[in-house]
Length: 310
Image (cartoon, one colour):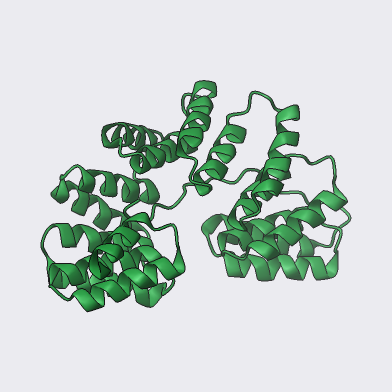
């Protein structure tokens, strides 16, 4: 694997608009305002408002559900899981929430728990493509790429317009070095959701591997313009600049990415490649070592590091 590729996920059942008549108008207003904040991506504001609603009435299940989604989007997976579990305690018949909980288990590295939820969901919805998609994501995390490919393909067989299935299958094809197939899947995903920035990012990396550097550069800049300050996009832009021989620009972008996220092993890998390009082997070795410290499964960093120490 050359660089990081982010998952493209769509959570289900995120926002409901339940407002029983016996609730005070200000609770109803606060809940609906929180929903709007969630829809607009102001996740911290949404969390604060849902928390205020729950202080007034801790039995408003929808507030736990939607606050869990906001926590998930903020990367606060433990808090999201706690809210989803509270929803399930209050409303055990609401099985759709298990999709959200499976995603959260996935982010927490709790693959067996995610599988347990999927197994139960499959008994209820045996023909649902989303179950295959989440299963594929679990296989991807475990680097079982052929199994992931099969799961995403099964999802597409069930639903020929499933955005997540195409976008994630494209990422798997990228991992497997099948760049033409990866490009085809990612372009199909963009037919379904035009200019989705995470897919543009993935497609830029595919085109870079195919040597189409100008197109790759245009796509990664479009993605960065849509999601400002995204460290993976910035790092990938640095990698593409490195391939183009723009060493100063590449150095600036990779270091900018590390200022935002200092624990991204792919940024250290790209920094190591940059050092190799300017013949600074000691710094390159240190960068690859840092990448491996953060993720021991970084195969290319390991290969490059061993080449420098032998």
